[in-house]
Amino acid sequence: MKSAYDVLLERGFIAQATHEEEIKDLLSKEKISFYIGFDATANSLTAGHFLTIMAMAHMQHAGHRPIALIGGGTTRIGDPSGKSDMRQMLTSEQIDANAANFKVQLSNLIDFSDGKAIMVDNADWLLKLNYVDFIREIGVHFSVNRMLTAECYKSRLEKGLSFLEFNYMLLQSYDFLELNQRYDCVMQMGGNDQWSNILGGVELIRRKEQKPAFGLTFNLLTTSEGIKMGKTEKGALWLDKERTSPYEFFQYWRNIEDVKVKECLALLTFLPMEEVNRLGALEGAEINQAKEVLAYEITALIHGEEEAKKALEATKALFGSGAKLDNVPQTQMDMAVFETGMNLLELLLEAKLIPSKSEGRRNVQQGGVRINDVQITDVDYLITKDDFNADGELMIRKGKKVHHMIKI
Image: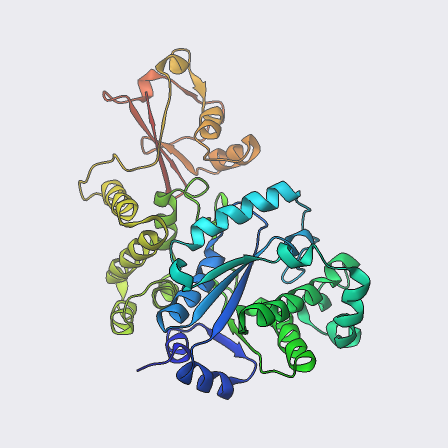
């Protein structure tokens, strides 16, 4: 039987391991507790988090116990990893609300019943720390010279790195120590951009506790140009359907690059690798079948089978297979609004298809907006009742992928 390490390696998750042979042996012979941290910087997790949650699920399926660590404390500091500027400061109320949403989203893929997984918040211990005691007991184990060679700090030195952020590595390392002491957690996992922070925790436990501790990082989801995946025309690809609708979520994965299909099938679905390899080998027009399977499987995992079916039906309707348009994202509006006409930019804002009029103006002038499949380049165009069909429907298309129906 394959170990969790074998599964993660085969599916393409593993980027780096602190003690590879020991980890292989450990995961094949024992059941361990491990953790992945999620800072509560927004009210929803994103597609980037989804990959780490999938890794967590594979570990749980192999009998290991996940610890989902919500960063109620570290969110107040900010992780400089992969950031060009200091993180925006959030209030305690915002952080707590975000953390509560994370718990709901994580529960969609991780089984927290009967202690099979646990969820904790590092605010429970970080906010009670005495700073002088912390620096004496924990800071003594860290070399500033070595910390400055870490990529997360080195890349920020030219633009400026605050002492606030410089503390982050110590706090994340302390989290691992705390979880080790409380729950016998012996491994931290995370994206490969967390490598330096994870090393800090592994070395802290080994020095201070004289106990084994391990770290494992995952490959990041990127485009063929090396840019992080999960960005849409509206911004991040969120797991919350109020921020990214199931239809938009489905469309994102349906339209990814051909060369990334096999990788995403392996990392973001539970399909057997035999099926992943079969679908990933399709070429030409047939690759669209694989993309449809990918989009359906991922949407079903995040939003449920019903929403995935609706998104699939809406996609088929828009691209000519004759299905109903009922599941295309839509906005209901009062007919009276269109008696004298409504400016196109105002309508795009009302339908939340643009974040601002300036961006909408660019979209229209560049030919990226169609009304009922007619390209509109006049930013002063007025939408009237005459633009609606007999059923009171009007279809907006922005770019190649975004479709939205207005109903009166």
